[in-house]
Image (cartoon, rainbow, N blue to C red; front, side, top):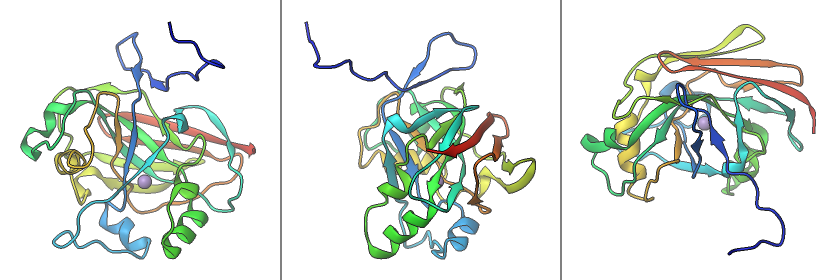
Length: 233
Ligand code: MN
């Protein structure tokens, strides 16, 4: 029997609507710049005819359940919200064709890709890794997973408000690379596994929050996600 020097940490997991079992998390993938208007506001427009999607990852330990209050993170003065549709992978797949991508879908969730924007932009502009800007403790906020096996979401309102004021408002039909294309492309690089989550990117309107702010987001047909920003860590 395996023994450890100290107790291993808990398995990050999410509740599943209508089920008592939790969905155990394997990896957290994030698509960069996947809505044109957000790419433009970041100063990096996307030309799909000559570009491919790109990704970053966060540690599964950054997963935070919707509804929690998390500390304002250290070493930033520009902590941003990004509202995203999240795909929950339920079956393994490698080099998946776009037309078969639906077979890997277990369901969907509403998520927040919280970001130290100041550090991300420094890293981007210096050609450094994004980890300090993106792989932030408590930064991968996610709702319960809504089971929709084999379903590809192609449209639906996506929006976010802070303290009741709408900041982001778009539609999933504006994804540059859609759910099928993302699953297929990401599966060229990774053997996708049950428990992988793919945050599909944020629309325009990202902005900063401060301690005490209440974030509420939703994706039509999926559900709501919420986060309260607490005092500094
Ligand atoms: Mn994002």
